[in-house]
Image 1 (cartoon, rainbow, N blue to C red):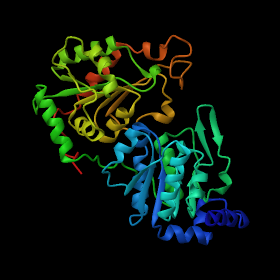
Image 2: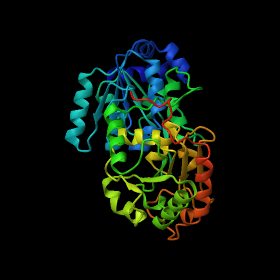
Image 3: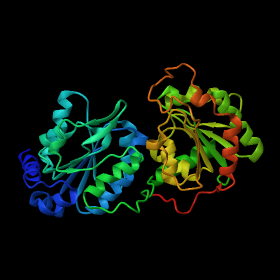
Image 4: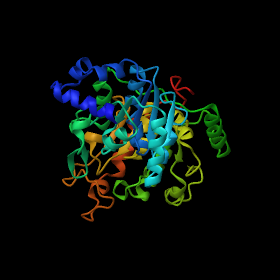
Length: 390
């Protein structure tokens, strides 16, 4: 704690305002960044939030290849995504109770943390950094909330600062953390996807048992999300799937969690050739499935960002989404975002507060079918050779 406080006092006493000045003229910061042993990064959110953070983790790994990189995570899907990832050395689970927080802090203190990096969505973690004895603390003085930008109460104690720009995407803003450490972020790339051979073998077995041949083309539909206001009507998804099946002969694969099975069965109806994989895939297995898919169709969700990372052709329905912040960072020509210009969007409510849900209902079946057919025209039914197992 004293080291981080001393760093903040030196920054103030020497009037070091920019990150470049602080890295060059604050000897405590310079010593830590010359050869950090342990770096802790907080990112406690779910699958989509963790996915858009992957380029930042890769830049941190490039900047400090010898450091032990620990991610402090919480949400199950976010943790699962990092399991086996070559970008990180360890994932620590941050609990919600006071006792569990003390446990995590004690574990971090034993690891002798040199650098503590706080993502934009983890505002309020400066006390954690101080308590675990971090020497240098990096984070955002001001970050977005549902009620607008909000300044961290302890922002003056940040050793280095990243600035959040509401005109950039979440992915682009998080990369500013790496830039604050002196990394070049101009030519960022998605990390190579990782899944183990057992994931690939399991998916191949499941599809074969459901009657899908190895060389057969299929479209994945992942229609569900945590927030009700992001959803499209099941009958419309079923209509889109029927159109694609008739027009292109492609098979339909439905994915979601175990809790989504009944909803996906409602979409599937009596179409026995459509495959419902609700609750049957781990994150690694879903990753492999999407590398084989000709197209993913979804709403604003974790799979949307996963498809962008994998360069899988994508059609995403984004009604209430703040697309300035959360648009998928997919390669040009590999995605189609369908969004209606509703005057009430973006909206962060779980249910439509106005009761009409126009932002999603105004998206027509024909719009989605047309977008899917355009994307299918440029995709390949076979697994792309640049996607490999870790």
